[in-house]
Image 1 (cartoon, rainbow, N blue to C red):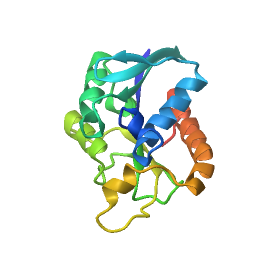
Image 2 (cartoon, rainbow, N blue to C red):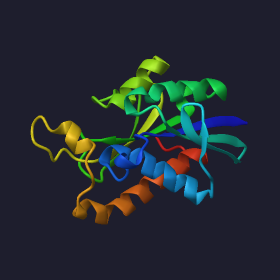
Image 3 (cartoon, rainbow, N blue to C red):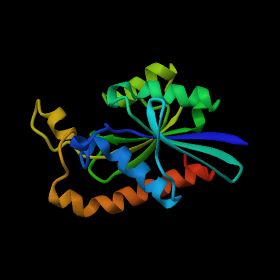
Length: 180
């Protein structure tokens, strides 16, 4: 039996709901819903566990805030003895155009504090990241406001399809399909 860890990046709290930076949470919530799972508060994260195709799957939403996400990832990696290549991180990416989805292995953090924290805690880039483009439609010096801002009405129309496509790619990873 192989263990896998699926991590949705975001920030905990109602003030962060429906923000660009919480896109990882939205995708992993969709995955949990498709498998009819319930989130449980656990150490450093909300989590769900289930078995499928002889794989033990753990889904987490770190409760450490974005810039400390690596602590939760390292904890669950060690707790369930998960290989780095069996960790999938789902993240927003402002360097990709809105709606573009890209799966990367051995990727840098691109300035994303959640990925930076994971790379530091794992001492490596050796895990797949599903990067979902949020675009870079912000004025110079307004990056934080943009990523922590709410989706606009035009983005909200397209968002369900983007989340669904991202969840499907993540589920392929869960089932052991080669997605790289």
